[in-house]
Length: 189
Image (cartoon, rainbow, N blue to C red; front, side, top):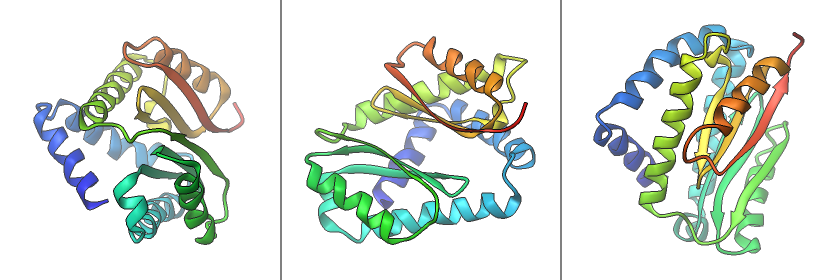
């Protein structure tokens, strides 16, 4: 897991920091405008670390898979690749055993873990999607979390259906996006 954090950090630096600057500018506003309470936001962030730590304690998961978990409103999105269903199921079980309390959305694909090049491209796709969302005046980007894994864009957040539909439309029409998967929780309009 530490390797992944270092790689992502290095990637942000290699891309001229444009994506990192945009993410940083949006992050401050995101905490204030997020539908989740500040306590839930902090809990979700802490749970991200707890899950990463729990997964990293298993050498087979650490060495043979590319699996990550993203927590939003106590729900967990599991993404990445595992070479077989046994390792995928083990990763899900590790998270279930933490008894986080929300749903676990299993989006781990069976296959060879993605290469550094693919992960770099995914970072670029995420940056493009966020950039296009930022340019859409009628979309509150602070309510949408965008994660790209092997060309699949995952959209998370507590958001109304109109905003969600707009976010999905923007993501679907961004170069490099193979598929869009909604993991939204809907609020009242």
